[in-house]
Image (cartoon, rainbow over all chains, first blue to last red; front, side, top):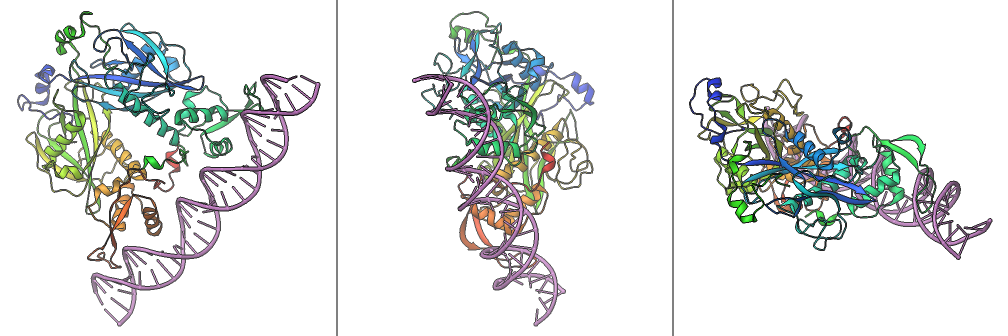
Length: 278
Length: 278
DNA sequence: TGGAGAAAGACTCGTACTGAGAACAACCTG
DNA sequence: CAGGTTGTTCTCAGTACGAGTCTTTCTCCA
């Protein structure tokens, strides 16, 4: 149940509600944090903000903030935070995939008080540079390539994930980011969400490079091509071709748009992951 | 970030923390609700409690309660609620699989105030009948078979899931339960968690009946057998055989225990789910 | 201007996995 | 004891997948 509590008295339900005092309950605050991922120049980036005030002043952190009590649900709060932080209007947010990742509620994860954070994961196409909100010193898309010395490339080690200046993230945001990357990698396997990183029209090669960048390994071009076209509803042809070939030659690729499938069947599995089994 | 907030002043971090007033923040309460599933006599059951007080007095609901601020994390809170509600001691809880399902935070989901509930999903072997906690009128394992007229058998329609007396669940617990069943069904595909519903030793047929009951469809016995034994780390032989055959004849089955795999590779996919794709 | 190199896309081949069904022996109940 | 049920193994055809080849088209650079 949503509450295990001793009612003041067993009166009528309405009378009881009127006498109800929310402040009588232990203070646990709820925030929403967003792990927004995008690809810029074929590199995976995450949206981070630099904290303007304590705690962790000056540190980089995931964008987020308190849920406005009584005004909005969790999904709306996440969308609002993302819009505020990216400076992108609500219309453009429609092209962004946003899903709940999980909640983090260790008592000491925030030094101020017990704060439960509901984390969200966003897949965005290439967006303009963010504008720092009023409560942030800076905001930026930060590359997640192998520049982090404490984590192997594309492995997303749970600790040590760093911000632009190489400093560790605030709070437990490194762990949240690691979980987000795990989720993103497996989401690509059985959903067509890789297309969320691309524009409305794209080539199979561009789609493949999304997989390669997020999974961190090269894929067989021919097999990928065959597979993508054979999964019903993954992509559909626009009939057109790219106006220019790739920068290093090759024929002009055909263009596709996202299909109507919500799940890939059969799935597009990552190659050989024996190590992940045990 | 875990907080987007105006610090009272930009003093030293410690001074700022000392002056911090948690009560200044909007009251959003956090609860933990548990969807505990088990199999009794080859039937899927969920643990429900009957609410002793308002709101929704007398209605059946998922077991749960407020997170004790500053004392415990979300996982511990879920384990505690489950232990309190089942009357099972912490030792027996070790055999129960408990994972976070998701968070539900629509502003009006609780009539008292804005309450965010972090839902957990538990897979339990057959446990004794629960004891109603002090704040519940009753607690019971409730069968989830096709007795619900508003939902097809094993489809878990998001609305209308009912309690023992056929009454709808309190709050948005019907939706949470539906999400939990979806999650459980897909978890069986790529994890060995079906074994969490069984005792420490089991036969392949018992394992198959777990899948059949949760997926709601009969499986090919021969292919299931081959598949289970071929996935590395799913089960390992104990060398023994069941002391008695099934009630309707047949040879004594060999006994197995859970292996050390945490993921099934390749996965054990549900048969034909065209409908789920779009 | 004419390769060299690279990429898009179609194709081939051998292997692995899957669903459907058959076969057979062990065991229950009546 | 007979008939039905179940555990387990096997066969067979269809599909999916990894790796490789081949052709064509394009860009870059000598």
